[in-house]
Image (cartoon, rainbow, N blue to C red; front, side):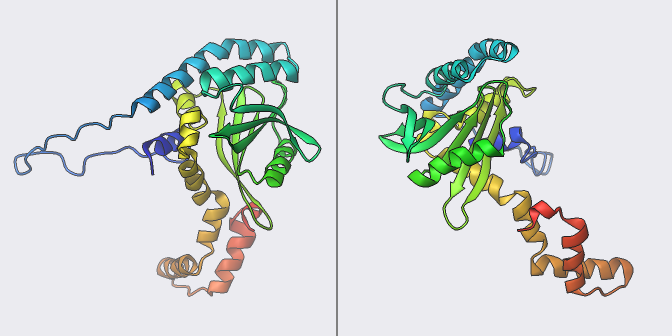
Length: 264
């Protein structure tokens, strides 16, 4: 897993671990020369600097749009500028507005190396993003065989991955609020994954896989697995001397312990 993935997971609440030495040097443990810190490649440093600068630059114009309840057209102007100035996309070669999909029009299609990689659906800055908006951009993605979908109202940026099949599986990979309480560093770490450079290298794939692996539904499946239920049965017997039936444990977990929306 890349360092960028770990950074974005920490900022989105998916991980919260601090590295500590296994043993402090002492009289019996000679101190070792610390390893050199990882040096990020120039393309990454430049991309992060550009994203950071854009967040600073567009925060006030974005707040002004929200304050005056600007319409969707004005929101798109800011989104276009942010996509170009902040995320590094070429307005003419890599962004297609009003991308036609079977008689409907996606707000943006993103191309990298001439390949369509994502659709973006933009809503007015004061409108909260919802499931209906996701269904809209999902229709475009299904029809064109595109796996990445982005919803934004300029302020909130949500990135979803679609895995094809019957039914398709939709996973939230990224959710960042440019006007939220997170630090500038946290916002930069998150939006870096949407930069042209990072997207081209598919760094967001690692982020998506990590979040999907630890989603509520994935963890619910782990809890209901035979090996975990058997471990629960043994622990219940150790604590209470009661030898519970594994089927009863599974039934209780489904009915009373796990949230219904986590059960597929």
